[in-house]
View 1 (cartoon, rainbow, N blue to C red):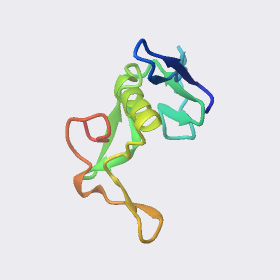
View 2 (cartoon, helix red, strand yellow):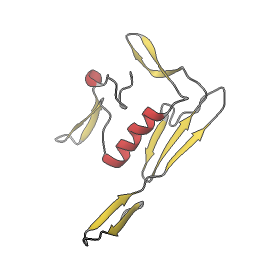
View 3 (cartoon, one colour):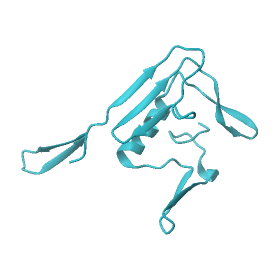
View 4 (cartoon, rainbow, N blue to C red):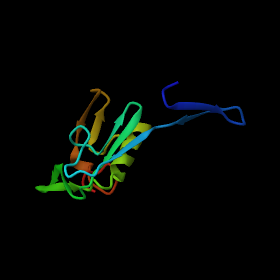
Length: 123
């Protein structure tokens, strides 16, 4: 059994699995925001999810659209947390990451990476 997985037996005798994922939220009240690995508000590690919340409500990210910097609200890390938990639990890839089975490699394709969903950098 993997770490964080718990198995129980139901009344019908079938084995059921539950996956517990600890989510650590660090809320900081500093002038300079703290990001994980330079660019992330939330990050999935093999056995946990780490999230940082900062005071800044309009922080210039490392991304741009139409020549304008995309601003992140670091005070509300909910979108990043949802995306990272989905990646951790279900193996969901961000919408800009493409996996090639024949090449066993990933690359970035930002064509369909916009929209109002947790993985969109522009939402």
